[in-house]
Length: 260
Image 1: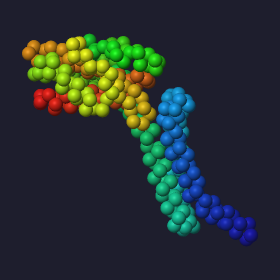
Image 2 (image 1 turned 135 degrees about the vertical axis):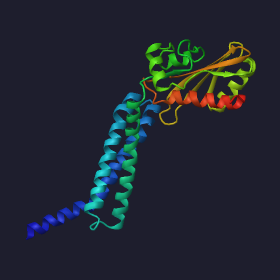
Image 3 (image 1 turned 180 degrees about the vertical axis):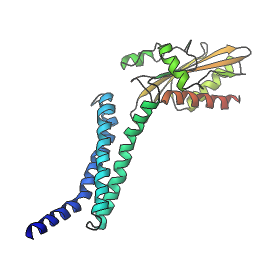
Image 4 (image 1 turned 90 degrees about the vertical axis):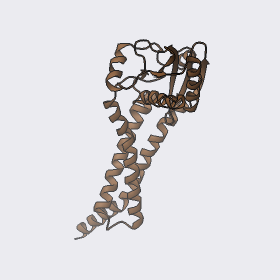
């Protein structure tokens, strides 16, 4: 009887501590998720280490927190106080949210093409000029468009990406294109009205990755044709960010220019 009693007491003690274990696992997952981009921005480690190592481990700890907190609520609810229940619920929620983030990006990686350079003109893409020194200094991707290797994948995944034709002549189209670019919150690097070229950069909020944008305005009959190119400075895939940026910019410019 004494052995059985001791065994029951041990199980009860373990169940009482499971909420704290779940909370510890959830805390580790949150720290990994938070420090992954922070360390990259601070220069402590490479962004690949943050993306390919720290984020997966954040997910693993988050899943572990979900499992342990679920066990605490299902098996030990009658043995833990309301504080333990509250801790287990918070750990379950935090662990689940942290695990979702890497899972979400991994799912996107498998559904979107592994390209990072999107343009409305795949045959003659707008050329980067002013941003080249910054990309070179950062050891970024080449500004040379990869050609059909990217063009074919873009057409399959983002078939709606196309040039915007405005009824405005090039000077008026350039002015509105610049206003639209400024309204996007981008950093304007160059605005050459004579060449009909605007270059800008945009940083992601979480990891702080920089993407470069070039806008080209050319005459098209009595109006103008606007081509846009958005390219990731680092990395291979872009999780659809550049395509979304091109769409958003063209929609904003269409609204400003009054062309529906």
